[in-house]
Length: 406
Image (tube, rainbow, N blue to C red; front, side):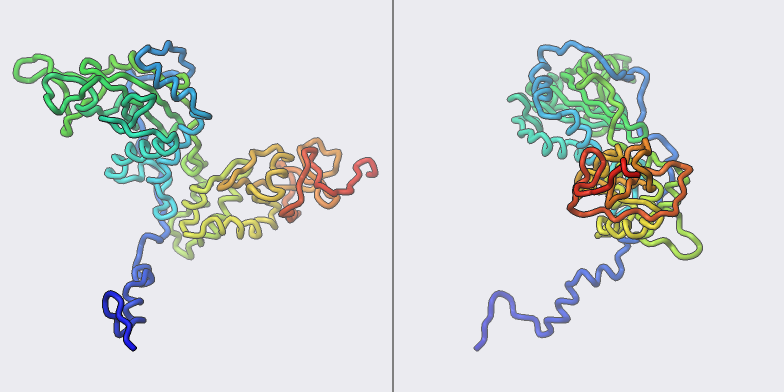
């Protein structure tokens, strides 16, 4: 009996399958090759004197912008979600797992241009913003657009966002509002403002033919905001913000970063596992996020490298805490930041007595505290239980250690 469905079955199925296999491409792929990058030589962002924005501003909300400002103020944890959407947008483009990049300056020109789109897409998803009738967004039932610039004051505005008799059908049906976004990874700063776009608030120039005022378009028929437009911007959350989630590798001590991500040595190059091991030796007592681990490992199974790193650094007294089991309880007992899913934190432990004044926890009758600079590293780290909780007093549940008996 012959069964024929669709195209004839290949005579040599194994060979045909091999030809279509990803393994053939992987044999010659360079996307998984370990890469190192130099420290950027130029700054990410420019802040013209006319666009200096101070933190802690107190402004009166303009009536025409009030619906948008109220909408953002009513979103749960809007400020936290906004800054993390900016962080995630840049990390997505850096794509450290495949490229090893850890700075905006490592991006190509095309990727830098796309960052504004990535910011808009991630904010749209984060806040579930609906599509507008004429613009990309609708907030509080009104059209509004999102603009990003790495330079304060550098936002480019298309014709459809404002009214102009000279634009004809290309002009906007109204003077629309825009959400202005900005971040500077070099300084961990960011800002978000709202402004009503008008013809007068955009840049003008002097026409070379007669010296008369003329609209200053770029090659895409867009115009930047005039410096005088700054007074019309309402800055959400009080102006310039100073807590863009930290790019750990960018802000790490240069020598420490080079020990984690060494340039191609004359001898054997450290493996992804060895690089992750070194990451948690170098970076202690602070949160390490998934993007950092992916960039350091540059492997598909980077999180598994963290689990394996625990065994490698334990002999030096170092523990790597995650979000499961007893780890969050240990982090609290040691007065460390508590990791959530996709985060880790390492610290070096030393055995102490119950009378030691440092934050500590007890496990199987032994107290442990974070090591000081002068504490010897002769004791391996304890094996933390997967399920046993460490109570708020720093003592493992079920521990029978009695400090008074010492």
